[in-house]
Image 1 (cartoon, rainbow, N blue to C red):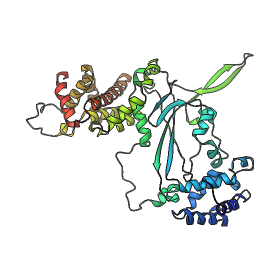
Image 2: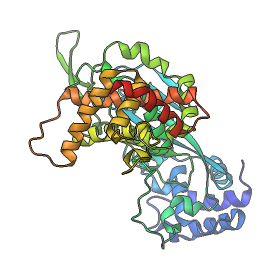
Image 3: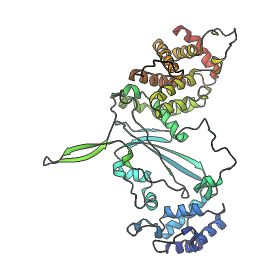
Image 4: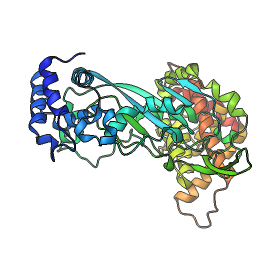
Length: 437
């Protein structure tokens, strides 16, 4: 989308300002003139901060150090890009998630996500390195070091607010009368698209593939997410540092036998099962999960707690796994003080009802006893019983394995009974599962 001469002239005035630029760019006559022109043409109200963000991403010459002047876009390209930013209705948001401590994983593609190791050049494209460089000319993207790691990349498309300033500084447009301390129980730590992709990955048998379970059953950690919004008016975050990830010294010998100290990612080794089984987590498996998520079996926060367990440490991890099982197989009626005598299992406690359903869902009598033992451990902690022993590695891994297997069973049940209510499915499981008690 090309800019007309009036727009080019207004932007050219800004492009001619010599470094280091005015003390306050936002009040400079050339900036004010361009801002007013944009408001007249495109509406959306005054866009001071939005326009400032856009100009920085375009490489406003007066804001670049002399040795980085080549980063500035030429005037026609900058003008056309700015015009397009005012005209766009949708934006793509990209979440770049390093898989810290990951062993070598096969590449995966599912939904709007992919898992892979990228070259430095590929990462520079994903991070939009030129735009990052214009925003942070003294903080280079260390793409070669970041390329040593594997990544989960998730993309999603959003409709955007027609007011550029609301996209640049959302807090200025928030309802100041609302309760800023309120908690939305459905929101997790990560964006929903990332949590959805992470839940899908957590259905894999990481705890069985791990060869160092006493260190961590997880096949990877996700210490941070870098979010890149293609919207020019959204300010970029600083480029991430590879030093925030797990690196270890690596000594090699050159042709003359001299030691050379390098670095490489630290990894948690997995057995060969990951190479043969993880590729099954493909587009087809993703579609099956998406279908299951629309059914009544996933009305409860199963996804929330399985992801929370992955992100938690210590006893909180075990509690989250146990809660994921309860969310999967428990009913509110289980905890009612008095159940109707017409209920053939009215004497069963809530714990036994969940255990019975697990037995039927997994067809595994040992899993029922394992769940009861773990529930007793959980209860001892929550109710503050004296003499609580440390939770062993096998117990910790067992809780994770049961929660994962139950979540996988729900997906199969959803496929088998797509139109059945959650209460009916769990009632059937209870009928079938009492033999396991």
